[in-house]
Length: 100
Image (cartoon, rainbow, N blue to C red):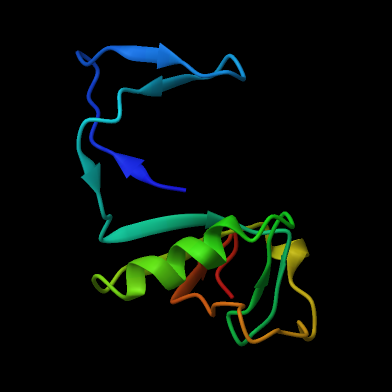
């Protein structure tokens, strides 16, 4: 997973999966990244969608710069405890629709 600079006036190309994507001209490293969540706990651990894409990207970017990680979830996705593996990355903040 990588991020590339793009704006509304920049052209897009169609990927092999039929998804519009920016031309890979200038790779950027975000200061903040929003991360989808399937489940989370009070320790800011998360379960994602199973591909490990965000965990690998967060490991890669941590070698380059500090990136604030914000998980997006609904409050009903909170569980008591997530069993973490050594490659799992704790988030800086988790936002839900409720103040928790």
